[in-house]
Length: 639
Image (cartoon, rainbow, N blue to C red; front, side):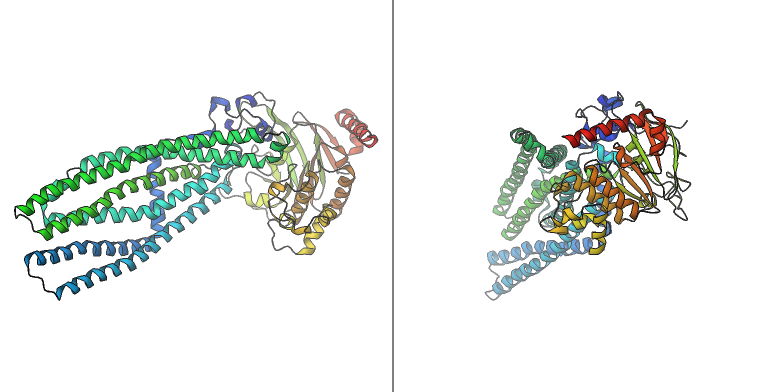
């Protein structure tokens, strides 16, 4: 017998006892700091890993380089214009040298002064125009790179399996798609500007200094080895500490998001002060990690300025002596001093560049760690496409467990649903009902040759095709923070008013909508917070019907409505879904009495099968559950 299992990192040690039957049960377990089977927690590894390997940094730099290659036209034009600016800027000291030497030599004419002034003015105009163009070309390139990173990151997230989102915090993903992407954008924008402007300008300036006075240039560059040591040492420290800061940003965003997502519970239990204190704690952790970075960064620039001042002192001492001894003209010393002063910017820029690149690389590493996560459930090579859809479901000897060391949730389950028929799956909580639905949708992979749609193994069917067959309504109905209309028409935004109203009537939500302040244009709030549980479930049913599915999956989606409304909705569905294969999962037997067949699961096994009347005559678990629920309904009416 083939048995499907999931990676153990989905569950924590406290869940491995087998008391928890589903992933949703696991998510309700609060002790998620420990992870089962070795204690490796995927989300925690992604979240708090501060150090990156050399391989990761190389991959990050390759990724950034690949983005530049895609936008190489803009990049190369921007660099070319930037080089024009640098070239013009390097000419200026030579013009000044010529003027100063003529003045000190007494060979300058009064008519020459306006020409020198016009030359300097022309250089200023050229530099202003070119600076505008290089800024535009290079910065717009960085914005496009950031947009592409966000797009690729989001596209990749959409391709990942459910388990990834069960083990990764939303706040961490938000931090990577916002803060980390912004750090990469800055590195690709001002970082490339600083690299080209700093290194090439410095190389050209040093070349001209060597041309003016080779010996004095060597004296000026004496602090260079010490500068290199400072840059390398501090660069590594900036990289690791910046990664720690970004991890703290993720923690902070997740905590704040979690608080507002559960604001009803917070206020009901009067835990505003406690939540505020927890946010303060994570904020303080962020401040402390930021201060560790600031201490390194704060010491870095003063050291750069100190080394630049040391070079200046050496040049003034040696150069001044040379002028006095007649070894160097005043104009040459003047030009040399200007070049040395302009070298201060590349030295400072070098420090800034290291900061930008280290931050950008660290952020790209964090982004790549998510991009390198592979979907656990993917299409097989050459997936099958059904030639025609009838909606027949077949389950053959299905045995399934959520982990290798966890008990089987389903045990040798076998049944089939003919096209257009309605099958109900009932049973006590934890009997494996919802697991069957998840396996049909391939949220998790069933064993091979155990689940079939129209005779095709669901594992061999193209995933997009498979999921397009279903209209799915879960018990916990998620609504987007949009209007009622947009939630009903989700995925079919061109749906007209009449169609939206039609599906709202089927799910018996139309009268409620009529009482809303803005009707179908009422914003439902985050996760549908403005609606009751029953209203959310009915909007979700309307949304599923809009899809015109071949197979309708109703996973305990009427649990929050009263029995009268339940009967109305089921009656409407029977009229509107003729010919649609329907699978109803419910713990309330009143919702399944008219099903063509009922399957009762208990402890993951099929215990009973038949129609409502047949199962009542047979007795057993079904009859006992029905009798119990009948008593509960009478007591509710009497109350």
